[in-house]
Every structure is written in C-alpha cells, then in structure tokens.
Image (tube, rainbow, N blue to C red):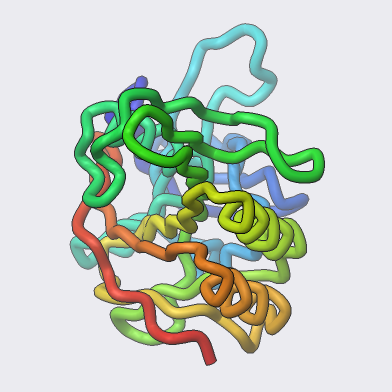
Length: 235
C-alpha cells in the first residue's frame, strides 16, 4: 500500500489529547498533525523524534497533516497509523497473497456481527465463512520483540470473545496481528499491561480461534505485508 501523497520529514514536539501532535517541519514551521492512534504509543512519542507526515489539501479536513511513521534513524521504521493495516491487508487479501487466507472469492470489510461490532474482514467463497480481526502492533520494549497491546483494551478482549462465538457457530475465526515495525522478529502478549486481554487471548485460542502474525515492510513510500512471525505462548 503506497501513501497517497509523498511524506515529508519533521521533528516531533509533542503528542497530546491522543489524536493530536505538534511537529516542526524542516523549514522551521510548527504545525499540528492528526495522530491516528488511540493507544499509549509507548516509546514512539518522545520529543525530538524524527517522524514522517502526510500532507493533504482536502478542504473537509481541519488538519492538513497526518502523522504516519516514526523514523528510528537506524534504518528502521514504525507505522503509527492504526488504519493502515486494514488498508494494506485488504489489498493483499484481494490479491490472494496472505498464506492460509488466499483461497476466498470475496473479501468483505466492516461487516456487522456479534454485539454491535464490525468484523474487519469477512472472507467467503472458499470454505466456511472466515471472520478476520486485525490489530496493529507497535510496542517494542525488548530488542526484536513486538508486543500487544500497549494499553488496556476492553474492546480488544470483546473482539476475541466474539470470534469465539463465531467458531462455536461453525465458522472459522482468525486473529491477525500486523507488526508495524521493521525491527522485530517475533510477537508476544503484553500481559503485564493488560492481563484481561492476555486471558481473553488464551480463552479464544482454546475455543478454536486461530492467531497469526505478519511483519511489514515500511518506507516513506508505503507499507506492505511481509512474512509470518511467531507468536510467543501467552504467559
């Protein structure tokens, strides 16, 4: 998935109110950008970090920049926009590029199911209906290890429970984690941050929910689905 508009570099001044970030462009101007990430962004929102912004000239948008990447300035990037995984995955699913999920005729995003929820993708026409929930993973506290979640997510636990119900009804259900970092080689659950989510994950796996993880290739040009990564057993 290529970014619609070429990104421009900046330095982060601060992130606040979850969805706002002030940054300094290379020409010295200070701007406010939209931060499409409701999580804690632990380790990704320190003052002075190099970031990449996507400008826009949409008159309907109040903010003219969107924060897309953190540049770790060592050859690695982290994608902070939580909407990117779904867009990148939709393209890959439609192109039949995802191992284990490539034999479906129809890819339907945002289908209502469960209790007032929407599944990220409903795959049909290749066996049992398959419900795929997607989570963006950006936390890294130990070199090479990506972790989810980076803050308490009751909504995430609810999704796992609803996937379990789909399995009980005879469908296939998949929890797909997309690591939006280029410096990680495996993933684990951050049970110390959200023990309830870790338990919900274990319960869902026992109920038959599948769990898979992929890394990403990230550059200022775009984000693409990469190779499968192992998931450490839940604590």
